Length: 140
Image (tube, rainbow, N blue to C red; front, side):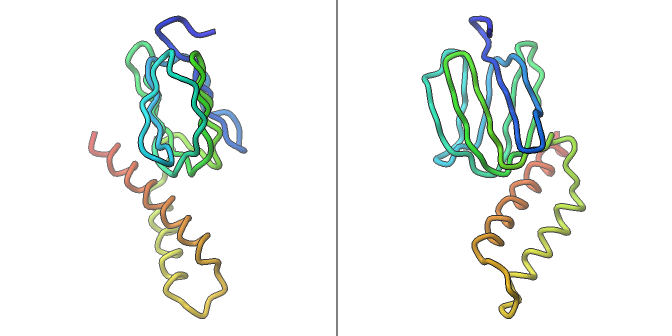
């Protein structure tokens, strides 16, 4: 159970658990806008869009994760991130993301290709957000 001034956070995806521990704040890219979640937050269930989830520990350390979408459940003493895909920000590979983004952009330009436009556009958004996070963290 979380202490009064902390909230327990679990970040999981199909690949497994990425984080489980206490936090003083959680920031997440909800479908309707960015959320800041503190201990004793009102219960909430929302969808996540691709972007960065940041967990600030009680000691002030920040852990950054990229999620490709998913769901977020908030209870007064617990936050659960159920991500479609998730990766620690430090493990993101810029070159691979750029290459994948170029492939998707080329596939969208090729009108004769047999790609699902909606899936390709969703992948393009996910890769663009991933690259933004990589570049922002590199500046720090």
